[in-house]
Image 1 (tube, helix red, strand yellow):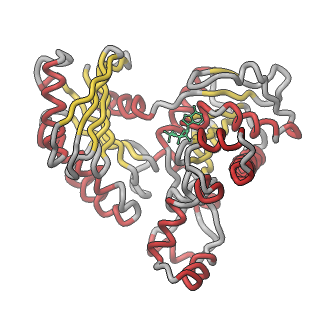
Image 2: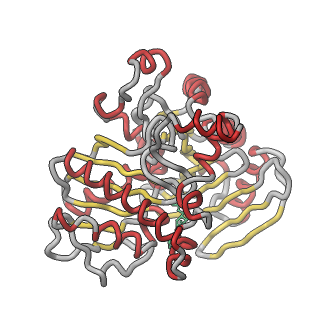
Length: 392
Ligand code: AMP
């Protein structure tokens, strides 16, 4: 059965088509710069990537071209073969603890939740509407970034602020990267042969940790928004909220400008003044750049602190997993993190750690906690949920 997994942004559209239940990727690609001029798309099929330039005024036009490509590449013979389209939706609020079949009610709710994710939910819905128009017979399924974390206890998700902020305005920790953490939970269940206590470290451009017990999220580092918790590529993570009005007074910046600074000019980029990309930070460290060295120490320390917190919260851990761009690829960042955990008898095997983008055990045999690199796969989670709805 052919299933599409889709991730729509305001000017982009990423897709992967799966043969299910085998989970074989038949074709994948990205449309970029939709509606803003200079648009193009890339398609990958049988390991071969091609890039084509074409103007797309809307996501609907991109979906029409996508369908043409599926047919001309003989991935499908007719539209009816696409049985389901699974969409990544960022914010499901408290309403969605699982993926859902998209209907008018769901669209209305996701639209209302745009207040909590103004950059993402409206863009995600543009994608949903485009596929509903162009592939009307497929089942549309919504898969939320927040859903996996709905199992957190209220003592974890509430902020110590006036309680009515929660009841009236929905102020609470939601958490994000849920599909990635859920993938790690399911893959680790296969590897370890049961549900264990996992600390999942999704560290990419955005970064969050998740404490997973019995396959469920019990705590996570992102919060009301994705700019909470860890220091990230260009996001500050946790700060003292009071520094916002202080900086507004000092610089004359507006609230929006300071929030933008915290999201786009902070983290690795803000401290180092070099880049938000850990590869550039690593290169600068090699050259002895002091700010890059400092940025890396701060970055690592925050991850270590959260690992320690979740270790205590779960009364120990069975596995620590590194995933996403930095987690899968940065040998030195993983080493710095694990070397800071020796007081918990957690040890790295340097030879095993010499790996990028590949599933591998990287802890030493005498480590009290197993440490793994597991490449994440959010798309397959979307395809699985979509397939399961159709099968039901
Ligand atoms: P993601 O958001 O998961 O796509 O991660 C993207 C980030 O991963 C980049 O901004 C880099 O910081 C990091 N990254 C990707 N490849 C490497 C690499 N080979 N070494 C170190 N960091 C990497």
